[in-house]
Amino acid sequence: MTTRRDFLVTAGVAGLLGRALPAAARGVGQPTPPDAAGSNDGPLPDSPLAGHPEDVARDERYWRRVASRYRVSRRPINLEAGYFGVMATPVLNAFRRNADRVNREGSVFARREYATYLDAARRRTASFIGAEPGEVAFSRNATEALQALIGQYRLLKAGDAVMYADLDYGSMQLAMNALAAREGAEVVRIELPEPASRESVIDTYQAALRRNPHTRLLLLTHTNNKTGLVHPVREVTELARARGVDVIVDAAHSFGHMPLTVDDLGADFIGFNLHKWIGAPVGIGAFYIRGSRLDAIGNAHGDETPEQRIDGRIHTGTTNFALMMTVPAAFDFQESIGIPQKAARLRYLRDRWVSAVRDVPGVDILTPDEAGMACAITSFRLHGRGSREDNAALARALLDEFDVFTVQRNGLARGDCIRVTPAIFTMPAEVDRIAEAIRSLASRG
Image 1 (cartoon, rainbow, N blue to C red):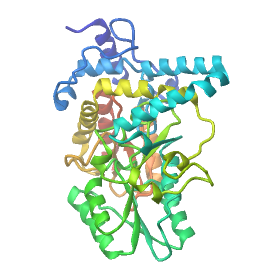
Image 2 (image 1 turned 30 degrees about the vertical axis):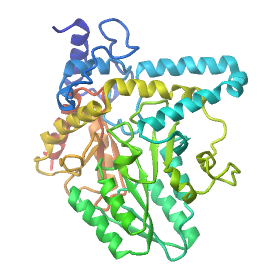
Image 3 (image 1 turned 90 degrees about the vertical axis):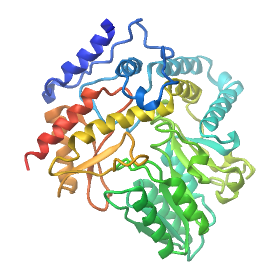
């Protein structure tokens, strides 16, 4: 039976999508209404964790309940969820309570009690990825985490090489360049195939490692921030390890997005975010160093922490106490949904718009449909229009004409693209809108 709350959510989204709003009409968004009980705090009722993820992904009544836990603007339609993950209302409320307490109790709390909360956040994060607490340290974001792993890597020497791909995050490419320059090593930059497949990605890395036997360090992105390509990290890591190559994995976009453990990835060094797909307050990332490999990463800035402790690998100074205290609440909410169920829902939303435009003449979808190679994030470009100017204009047209917010990505060997990323509160009608927009824009030639 459809409740009044269900009707309001459905009708509100449908009304929004009925026609594009003029640019001047945007600005004040319409938040998602609370659930039928009048509260959008607390755990989700009747969470179908026991259901098969593919079946749960299509349960629109359930996902409307999930959406009701987010107070988000739907004008414009935000399909740029890859930037950061907004907090669900239970997490936001916990953050506000924690901030109030920290502000009220001041340094008495920070000096006497905060360490207990920090330890709880570390243990919860480590447990989530199947690591030991002593193998995890917090940063302010994945970029800072990966910069620590790359910049403090101390096994590189003159004559060695570092390797990365065109799809790797720009800041991480720069960090690899800086490391190589400092140590007198070579930089090997490879181009990944487009469109890609599991086999072609593995073959590309295998060939590159064979051509460059002096490679010592490989940067490998799990879920790519430009196209959403999910790399076969474990397979590539095994190829690298067999040749004596260390691998640093950028898991900024996969942590909390899909099921993931350190054993799944197989790498000794991993950087990730908690404010993207885990939905913690903005300003927290972390890194993992396998306990037996701590010697490969030096301490930061002359830190005198004993080298058998990971804490010396990063020193951020005073942290946001309330943010760290809120980490367990963010995990609680995401795990109440279920990470496999969440991953299936995001893939369902992605497949819905991609399947509607993949065969449209003039549209290039840059991410394959192959199982395990795609996630929420997928990018496209109009055929032959890979310039920065073309894609900037395309992003403006999507927003101004169709009320859909996306983001342009650059750095790909074959040209810029538009990244499309739904969230777990995104409704099917909203991804239908971008499919409609792409078809219309492609038809203009």
